[in-house]
Length: 243
Image 1 (cartoon, rainbow, N blue to C red):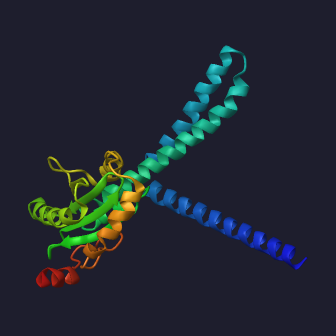
Image 2: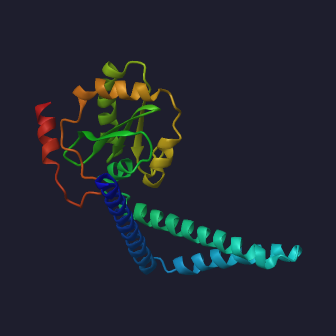
């Protein structure tokens, strides 16, 4: 009897936690919507146009079979979904446009990668806040550099040489985040990463992660987000002097 009561109490507690999480998520979305609406005057008109436009198309298609009211319901649902997707894309574009050019922006983008990625931030850096981040995943090892390209290229080459002693034949990719020729824009970094070919298995990822434990970042990792202008990387500077 006591066991059943405990189970019921646990179920109620879990339900309360889910409701609280759902409320918090809705609140975050609403706050994001309010912020985006203030900065993006076209947001609401575009969302309304998507909703009304798709619903109107569904209604007109339904007229062909004299089933317009039956088609209207799904049309409204699809229109609402399109409006939400539009909102998400414009928020994402706004966030990336604000982060672009700030030191630490690439680290922030990598930290939000979806999938089985192992991110180690700031495995190499300079006093000018240039940095190289190491990402381990199914494509192999990906080194992502941000900062001045002429300095970042040198950092990438050094880190690539260092890693090659450990990873053997595992592919090592290098990426420079930026808007120059041969660089990957910040807003496209995640997409670029997910399009890399799958070269190794999950078991290989685990094995390589253990093998690279000795090469774990010896400098301070960048914060998980764009760094403020004028921020210092004192710990990285000390690490570079030790090297």
